[in-house]
Length: 101
Image (cartoon, rainbow, N blue to C red; front, top):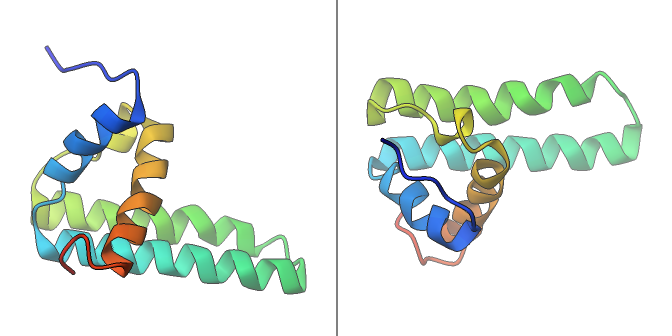
């Protein structure tokens, strides 16, 4: 039986344990970077087609990392909102050096 998470702090420890492979973390970082850049570009252009790219880049890079390198199932399938938040928290933690790139 899988553990059920009710708060983000408890979930984030699990989330990090699912991202031990450095290539997986780097792919997450790249995908989240693209999502941020596309979102900023959207704010300047208001080109709604760009919004289609957000999940393609966000999930595309991450899922390659999980299925090919980490060899596990993305937490997004069971915890979509916690997982989305985890992506951005891990991105921040990599930026500030708390997590190895």
